[in-house]
Length: 617
Image (cartoon, rainbow, N blue to C red; front, side, top):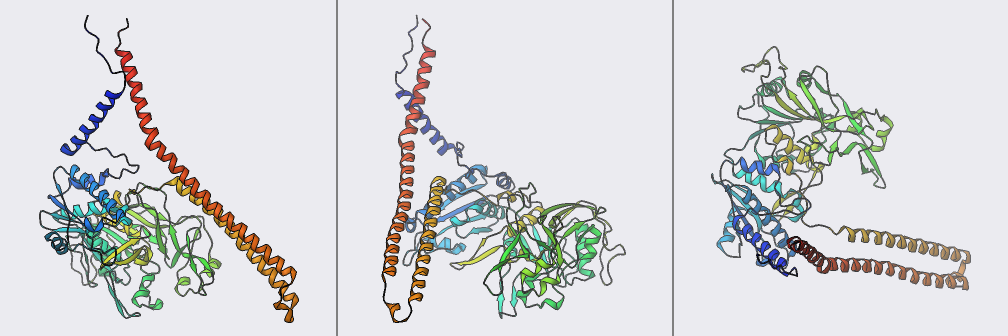
């Protein structure tokens, strides 16, 4: 009879085997690079499908250089932790690129060649305290053509767009030619001069971001034909466009060109250019084109939205009122690429877009008002002194008005009689292929004040969005030029997870504390009022002498104040005790309960294994 195999009576051997297996998996990950598991809640280290598609579309290899100053950041744990987050994500890029990406981590120590390299690339160092060395924490992506795209400085506050920023840099560095986008506008979107302030103005942040993504060029005002190599055309406030200008847009669309059209019943951004409201330049509504396309922006009207109206201060500054012509829009979750994942948009005096049944386009609304909306005369907003007066002219129609729409179809020309006088062109009567147009009924939608706060960060102009207007603009252009891969990257999770239970405890304690504080303040006011009444009742020279009633009142208040302060300290102490108790429970779970549970689980499997292996007799 064959000898029976002896099995361990304790889980020690199984624990050893388990540890060896973990070490082996770690070595395989180090050597082979393929054994990686992302257990974070938001999949922080799992690249999205958009990034994976982008890596497959690279025209050439890309070399990544991550610059990070080690020594100067040893006492800045926030930056060091975020550096590990960025480094781990870049490692995942390299793993998924099938050799198209390489990564080099560089420590630009002071007065070194690495520091010279970082400075020559244009990376931005930051000094976090006076007297401390500057810190480099940026990325340079260099393609085979030698083009380098930069992320000047990784800021933890921008973690939500981390994957988008890296993927954009990789895509731009690794493709042979950036798509060409033409911008045509009567507004100074590319920068200009403020006649009122007497100083030059910077380009709009939305236009600047587009320039970083594509080869975006401003068309001169006298343009009469769109170049053939333009992939997408952006038209912003075509006020005063003549027949030749509209014909150029018409023929561009018929050639299969993609168009983003921003029109407006009132372009309030004109005030920054010094244009008077009565000059007739406040509205743009190219009815010649829109009528042929089977859509319209209701002429002379502005949407008033009572549910989404933004509160603004009155002229006196003593109170606020909800402005019917300024509104937030929070669209429901959507699978439409242009608005997918976006949550908040700001509009100013937007128009109402409508479609007709005979339109050659399919009309897909992208952003709309609430149903508690109506139309008011645009003229009512031109010289508006009191936003509250708009309610006198407002009537809700129980209709959601469209602010932005996507059109797809094959239109005919808006010039059936041929080119306008003075224009020579190969005239097209109808589009032979489907084209796409994005129409937005507000040009202020793209202006900086509506969606972004700009700050100077050590000489670098940093944009911190507070709304998704800019992301919508980039999504729209990317959709029109056919690059939808980066659209899903507009928002990512945070690697710093908040302690929700602790935060809830703090909120509850704060509510109790504030309630007690209000009670103390109310009692103080009541006592002071009582003292003032007693003082007035006495009058004369005796007013300066405290009688027994006043003395008793003051003594009672002092005793009451001591008691309430004791209550405030008790609330704070209870909060600290609750948090400490929670911390002790978490330590017990992590240090004792989890290992003990794993040990018992292995012991149970060992007993089952021994029982299964033991002969029945």
